[in-house]
Length: 257
Image 1 (cartoon, rainbow, N blue to C red):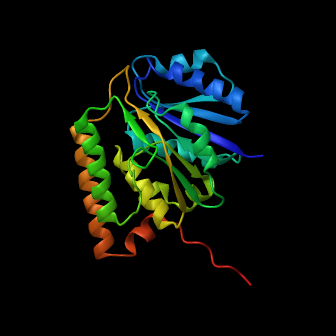
Image 2: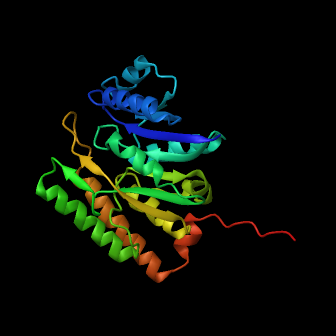
């Protein structure tokens, strides 16, 4: 039976990664859920990768990247590894800083639909919440999603959430090699690509907890990138309606009678 693969990108998460892996081990034992996990380490200078390897869980591996290319590049590298294997049916993405609660994992897995599908952990639907965020961060996240939702015409409530489950069937239909977003707008790009591919998308409420240890990767440059790229995608979709579909979705082979 094929199983779930969890991808966790890291950049200097020595203070948090061990605790996350231990919580996942407890969930694994208590739930009986069979999964593997790849820590995608972008040249951390604080021994993040060494900490993971020292914990030595049989279901955890480390992908050492030679240089830091941003969140999007890290996830795409993980997707390629997953698709090169025949062991997995679904890929779950989550942060390594503890902001994505393992307590929400069961409900995300339980929402998986057959076929091309995306389960999206949402902070902005009933039952979803944020802990320890300043008001300006909450406003920024909500405003960004509302803007992207409006200009891209995608009816989802949390386009920037990174707590997700992609079916391998969906990922195989996407042209991952043509994607280029590096920061958090990678999440918007993937949601847009899933929508263009005709995936079944389900939103599940999650509790997002702002990190208590380590340093946030959010910056003005990341916010600006998301604004510029989203506006660019919106213009392309209006001026060349079929261009995005051709860019992101592989053309299915015609059936031979």
